[in-house]
Image 1 (cartoon, helix red, strand yellow):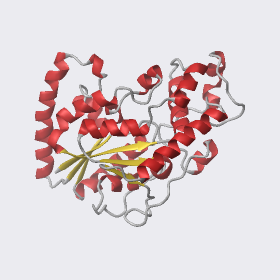
Image 2 (cartoon, one colour):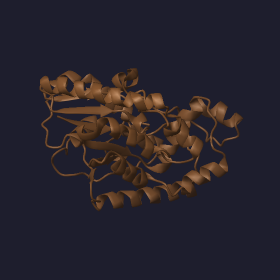
Image 3 (cartoon, rainbow, N blue to C red):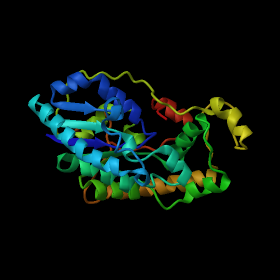
Amino acid sequence: MDVILHIGAHRTATTTFQAWMLQNADALAASGIAYWGPDRTRAGLFSGLVKRPDLVTPEDGAALSRLRTALAFELDRLADQGMRHLVISEENLLGAMPQCVDMLTLYPDAAGRLERARQVLGGHLGGVALSMRRYDMWWSSVLSVMAGRGAGLPNARGLARLADHPRGWPEVIAQAQSALGAPVTVWSHEALGAEPQAQLQALVPGEGLPAGLFDARKRRNAAPGRAALREGLLRAGHRVAAGPGRWMPFDQVQRAQMTARYLEDLTWLRSAPQGLNFVEMTAEDAGKTPAAATVEEGFGHDGQERGLA
């Protein structure tokens, strides 16, 4: 029995995938696929694994040994029940949005966090999965969520730093490979964000999924839009376009720069780097012909694609 670790990223329809997995947990278990999501990982099971590396205490280190023992026991129990795969979905293993904003960097401590996960999962880990998203859309979603929580946001200089920061998805993916020592499957939010069944198929390629899996086609954990954020953003001195829709803090030049970088990332992934599996398929194409990934066109397009923010 193997463990497949889904580490997000945040703001890439991860909550929707987790809800879909939970809704279909019984049917999937009958097919040999067990699932642990935030309802399990955030109930104390993984509490020592989602800390910032610089805040880890000796007590947290001792807890890793206990967690390894508990995990081995659970895997044996699941194997006895006929499970072949355990899918664990927990995006906080990769990092935390507040720290990304504070450091103006995409998951700055991913390596240290994921190394701790490897210490626990070790030889059980059969694969890792990560979803990525266009930089301007990802950061606008993250910043909108943080604004909705009343957190401080980057000024113009900080936004410019985000627009041309050298650290991107390839660096995060490389750290996941190195820290976890397992094959990494990657897909784009633009292609698979609205297709949780296709995401699961990417996690367990070659595994026949049961027929009739339920999909509510429901948007979950969407970022607040301009209407909800307008008053606070204006008070803080940020630009906010008129009308409803997504708040976009970046100007057109910055967005073009960020989109060009993302397209370079997609080209790199399509070149089939060693140890990576880039999946470009829809639910209808799963197991058939890969479909080309698209690039989000903005808030209106998001609504057409289920509006996952």
